[in-house]
Length: 117
Image (tube, rainbow, N blue to C red; front, side, top):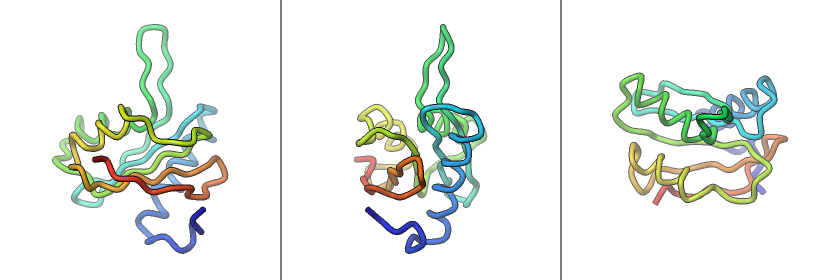
């Protein structure tokens, strides 16, 4: 486990935003991504009858729709033990193979950092 206070302030920010989105919306996951200009995009799980998206894929889609051309980092707050291959692929498509993805539990404690690759 990683002490969230030991994170870079910008990484701590996206973990906090992801955690807030999860709690505020009462969804299984919250996510946030930071683009190449430092802008952040925050999302929760989308679970409609006709559309199902993880929080991380939704945040990446929001970044793309807003004109982002790259990602610096991503964070997902979830009870899951891993970041799915599909989520990592979405981050990789925009940010590249080395983009860090922070995986945090519901309490905001970062459990792992993986790359999008």
